[in-house]
Image (cartoon, rainbow, N blue to C red; front, side, top):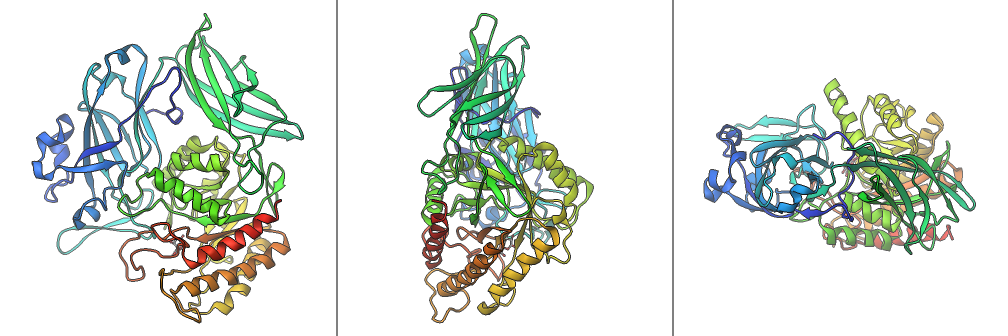
Length: 594
Ligand code: GCB
């Protein structure tokens, strides 16, 4: 596996990108021998040639495979599944340098063969991986890519789970996290080219903002011939070059009268992006490689009572979310991505947390562009106990996440998720990126938690009027005020209510509000709003996040009616009464900025 950068494949004068998305062949091995694919080397020939024909299904990529068929055995499958497809590589590609294959994510453990040769493997879901595959390809001919994907979750996988054998002999995957364990090739697959000497990674950071000057630090990694010139330019929306440098792979650009990246609702033109253009030139000044990275100029700073973007205090009002939709599960779906962000804007939210795993890069692109802030969470959820191998994997997942998202202006905070050995994990984040604050979503009581000692910002999740005191709306306001204050007093840090809410079946009405009705959700939210207003006056409370943006699918349990219904939008992204209610509040909060 390639250990360098993980830049998103982008076309340029020197790079070509070809999508391998589409309908792939898909086989679920027979339960009597789950390893049949390995025993019979399924990667050496087309799946259609090997498996019984009726077993080869059509599977869209990207998509989770679980809800595509009508077979519950595929929905609830535990273990390996196999994918393949063929593709052509033009003859002239043999002359142009290196060919790469990149998966936006496969959930979870996966191995990839090109023409029968193992080309790469990866374990953690929701994160991209790629490898150079030049040596395995047949140029000017048809090629085959085969993927084996294993969704088994155990004590040392991320996330964790447990596999039991039922009396029927079937394997059953249990897990404690509250979202459906979707699996498969769930993000885009791309074939792309780079020259032999290429730009492997880029890091940018706004290190200083003065009234009419911004300083942007950059660091570039090049692989290949060391004797190249690296020229960088910052280009604005009107294609004007506003700063350049051509001395080194490291430097600082000075941008006069910069247009800053502002969060949505804080500026008439939020989400302003420049293009950070990197060019590699040979001795004759000829272009070898070129990469265009969208960048935003903005700073994030924090104190023990506040969070500041571009030196302005921000109040975060938004949601916890999921990548989740009917049929496609966690598969990337661009219409849904844009619809979701349009709803985020409609409601007047300025932030969301990527609960409980890193979201697709295409989603992050939209947030960067629209100025929606993101608390970027790694895929460690409800970790029960920490064994060394799990800690090692948790660190790998954070390394991969930060490598992927380090340049995104939308990412204003890293969330390491819930677990006891926080100190080591937070130290690891700080060693990779100290420019953003860290947090952890705490579900425990303030009196038993020590982990928040290590983070910069306290986040707590609490379900007053739901899991605690169901039906008793009148206790909410005081409980929330007391708990938030206790967190601040214990750790002297800014505090966010990272989750609160209640399940609501759209169309269920009761007056007065009764649990599960639309009225109850509205009243439950109102009681929290009262608490938040009181807390804001005390100065350390910096954000409110409703759980959840939209209804989502979970494992089958008697507490979930068709999934978790705490969304203010339905799973098909239509508003419940609560959405209109929140909209009034979020827009009123936003009016304070102007
Ligand atoms: C939580 C979890 C979230 C659940 C939520 C709930 O604390 O972080 O994943 O979905 O509660 O609705 O139970």
